[in-house]
Image 1: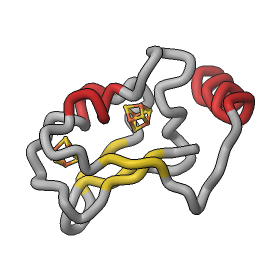
Image 2: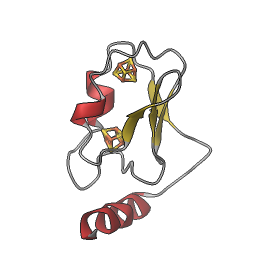
Image 3: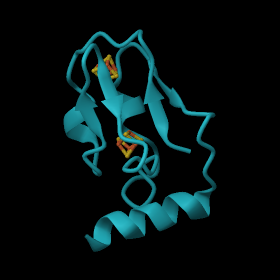
Image 4: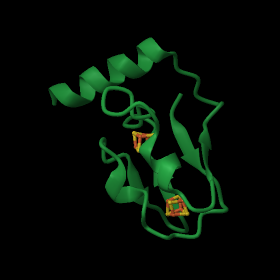
Length: 82
Ligand code: SF4
Ligand code: SF4
């Protein structure tokens, strides 16, 4: 499933540049993740890059939007075809 950023985000800016799908953006208050662009880094890396760099561990799975590994792979294919 896509990931989401909780309100514990301290706006440190380090996650946005590491996202291979440009899914992370500065929202009104904190950084946010585009649901339709986050593949959990499937297709690019073996683990979510944003989670690896976040200093306060505020990036979590969005359980409101469940996706299988196949769904994430299909999203990756869609994103890279554009
Ligand atoms: Fe981007 Fe990967 Fe984080 Fe999703 S898990 S927001 S694709 S860096
Ligand atoms: Fe917020 Fe974590 Fe991204 Fe920093 S790395 S901007 S704390 S979500």
